[in-house]
Image (cartoon, each protein chain N blue to C red):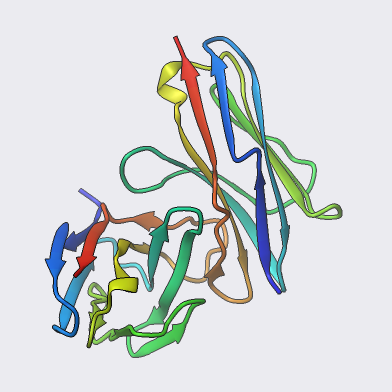
Length: 114
Length: 110
């Protein structure tokens, strides 16, 4: 089944403790992206990747890192989480180079930083 | 500054009603506009619009884009309780950047 998976789905952590949220897709998509969703602010793009070893900042990259060492995986790293990073995070992927294609979203990761 | 505004913010209707959701945008190097439906989980794709004036339809849902006036509408006819959700629009701009609106929350009462 074609899908985007994220782990963990729920995470409670404390300020300053490094964490990684994994994202994996099995559709051989070149493009992957991370979003956070907050009430009243909608979905905001954190980082995106056009292909392996090609990443770029979205609208709210501060406090986050990403890497794209393989096509299928695009982990989101919070080196020193803070309470303002409490949010619902979505990973998405799509084939690059075809404007008619849409993004496929993962199920979301709900993060609480105490 | 790139921005997207959706209206109304929230809408409550009865089953069978028709609703129109609005999305206006200002983005650099517009490429397409996507509509998503979000229930209590990840957004699911509804439509992608790239050309003005061409209506896209899927069952009771339809959508159209006006690239001159920079807006799109999403129509839902004969609404059902299963249509209750947040509807998001997202222009794609520059290369592969997306900006999402805050959404319209639709509640359909039985």
